[in-house]
Length: 306
Image 1 (cartoon, rainbow, N blue to C red):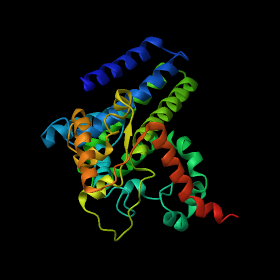
Image 2 (cartoon, one colour):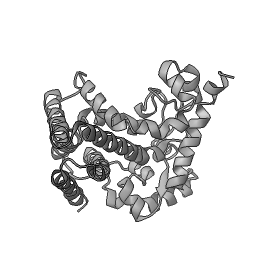
Image 3 (tube, rainbow, N blue to C red):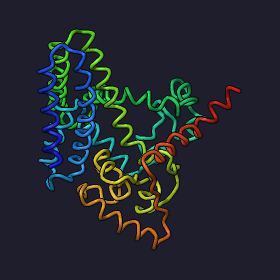
Image 4 (cartoon, helix red, strand yellow):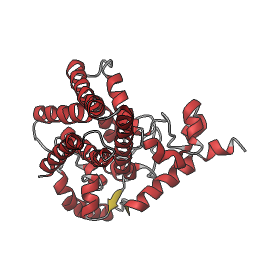
């Protein structure tokens, strides 16, 4: 049902885009399409974890179609990156999601930062959401760059699907809209898409403990201590596609999204029995915690300027 609704919404956006023609009203379509792309990203995530199909091959084929063809993001590249994240969440040096590419995630990273991370890190809490507007384009850029990586299993297939995506996407924009409207549509769509993705993924781990090299934790503690659940009911469930149950998702990554709420009750009780801290917060509070963490770890860079 969820996949069907997302497919229906995507078809509706395409139909509205064709019907409206060269009009500034297309910006409403850009906003709606950003939400649909966010939901497609969540669908690709579920396919990658084999939550939809029990067998690997249909999961991979579905992931390639949704990620590469519909989103313009390499499924193989993202799978490699996301698998390493799940194995060692918030682990400096092992989790690619906390690598100091532009932002810094620990004070050690801040002290060692050079170039762009050093410049951005000073004010990264304030720059976080503006930078998210570039996340969609960043995913596509890294996807094309990954095609030359020997670890990419299907570079020709993924390259063909990515190329088809952008030929249809950009070709449609500039065929229907004037150049100015097409560029504004692109900026609004990609910018809001990036903010949506960041708003879904950032509350789950940012602001939670960072694991340094040499720290020994069992699987349960490694996953629970570095993750945060986001409370909020049905609307948050829909908005975050089940990733608001981040602790349960990390413990049982192939568990289908509809089952995570039931698993949450069991997991929280079990952690209480063992005395393992189990963290939950509302959506706004989780973002506040993430931003406070970003500001805190950037302090060495600001202090160096004084």
